[in-house]
Image (cartoon, rainbow, N blue to C red):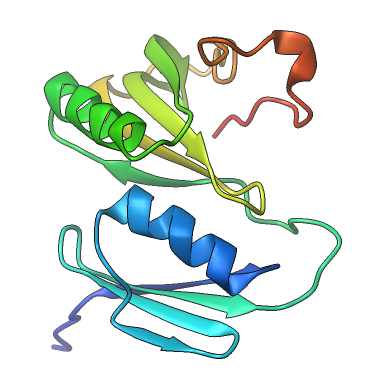
Length: 154
């Protein structure tokens, strides 16, 4: 049996320096390696080899969003407070139906528009007819009209 050490996620970014600043705040750690057009974050919790690769592009591509699942609503709120303290703009979705589960979550967006959520599943396996409510709440101080991207769901 193969023993996996951690997952690897590589994101293309427009500007690696700008993205390093954001991900320092999001993850609360310094990159373990920085080179021209490249940065690596060796995340311990959850275990993740996370890299940023500078690559010019005009659209985000097929990636929908990224997330960190936690154990409780208190963990969601603690992570949100950490992001706010680091100067990131958050968006809450509490008691929301998303991905056929009842969830509490908080969102942030990186400089290239990739959305990250921290979430807890409160009730799983909702019926397929359950409406998706993702993206229905806006950040404090932001108007719905100023949001460029459509809401992300599942």
